[in-house]
Image (cartoon, rainbow, N blue to C red; front, side, top):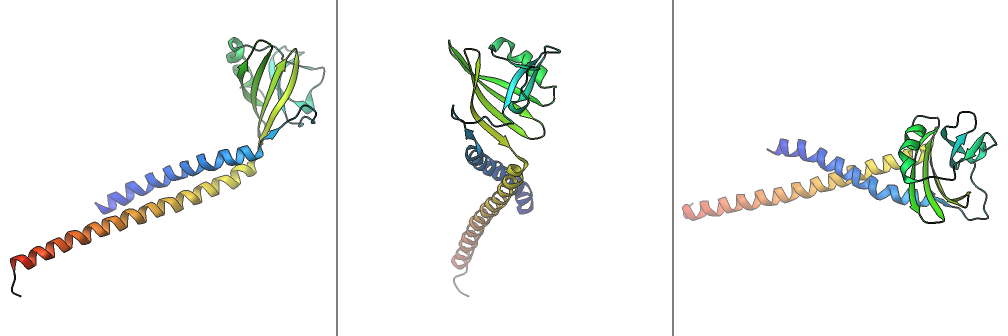
Length: 192
């Protein structure tokens, strides 16, 4: 029973504690690395923008540094054509996904994620035919190289700690049951 207990329980605790560690650490690191853009600041070169190519009139993701007369920024998006846009940009290079965050009568807030070769996420507002970048985040490989070992280490540490606590409780339970058996022996055999 102890072997099954350890073989089944330890991996479950290990995997769940790694997942918990990841979910605790990831938002902290992402929030720290997110750049909030002011209206007077320079737009980052890899800020993703949804565009229409003039030669094939197809949706694609273009980085701010690559904008030219060849790529026309899309300034009218509604929830009805988001699925079509996601199908098209999901197959392109860079590929990605778009999501409408908020729609009001005079503006639309967009979140656009692009991948080539790094994940880049940009939030921007479309208002009166203009695009105003609001937030920007670049998910670099270093983020994952630093975050994965930390999550795995803390998961292993937590799972070992839980196993020590469980083994300690089981040991105390076994000692108390042995003491109960020994006290019953004394009651049956008062003369030794």
